[in-house]
Image 1: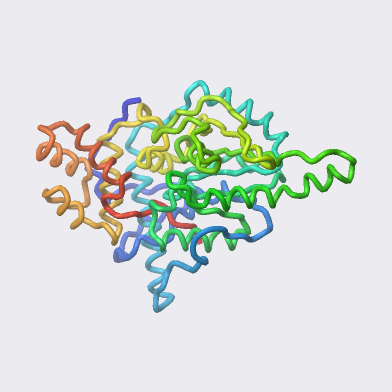
Image 2: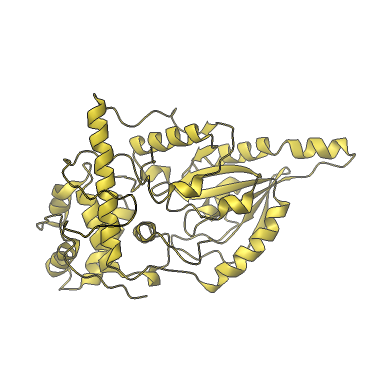
Amino acid sequence: MAVQLSGNWLPNFPKVPGNFSQTRTKPKHSFSTLIARSATASLSSTPPTIQIVGGKSPSFYIHESSNSHGSRVEDDWVDLETDLYHWTKTLRPVQWYPGHIAKTEKELKEQLKLMDVVIEVRDGRIPMSTSHPQMDAWLGNKKRILVLNREDMISTADRNAWADYYARQGTKVVFANGQHGMGAMKLGRLAKALAAGVNVKRRAKGLLPRPVRAGIVGYPNVGKSSLINRLLKRRMCPAAPRPGVTRVLKWVRFGNDLELLDSPGIIPMRISDQSSAIKLAICDDIGERSYNFPDVAAILVQMLTKLPSVGIEVLQNRYKIDADGHCGRRFVHKLANHLFNGDDNQAAFRILSDFRKGRFGWIALERPPK
């Protein structure tokens, strides 16, 4: 789907409906607490038990000396989200809903009735944007584990921020790296522990025990199949670093006491929050045909210039061109002229690839709401 971007994305914007702040007088500090506006609704229902699994103990990620400075940091995040809203407002909506997803959604709802526990996998760089808005309604009171995959692609501060947030929400969380197997065994043990009561009830009824059934669900390309392969220690499910590889539901056995359901990525038929849609594109969690590479790379450039761990200097030093942070499209075009004979698509692909490979550092594009 072609996407068109107009204007230079300067900060003089008209008034926006909703709770977005228009005043831009705060200084830019750290890239701290993210997206309290559009994403909180998808996590409105959470289990009551607190259990954080994997990595270090959670700690609050802001270490400021005063409440006033912490308040300025929050205001900066509001400013960033306001900017992102305006940047995406000029684009055609990014939408991606391949035909197999509708079929998968219908079949998955039927398979949910057989599951003892559901494992929801999200991209650790954008946990809110990879939260399906209907997941809570589908799962109801089923036991649930949240996996934030790609732990290796975010900073310790990002990880601690999300660990603290989900601990306060009472959500069971496993931080994982599906490519290298980190967190996979902990996930298997937790799934079996949560569903242990199933066989207690079966024995009480005079029935033989059966394996625990765990379904693994989530957005495309968040690492569901890779996690299963790491658990099984062999390649049982097709996996590749692009959305839409898994097309059918598949049950696989892990030992004698756990069965796992690998499912294709599910995504809403229509993505109403275009800020989330752009982040899905940046992180390669949505099909490439749904967006225009130069437009998405331009927004990424403007986001990176606001990150204190990246900033304009890192972009300038890496690509050896000037960047002003106000017009990402101008930066993409400069890079195209500098390295790719004026090809904006190749320049945009390079910027997106560098981010996905951690060339600017391992950073999240979202921080928890307060």
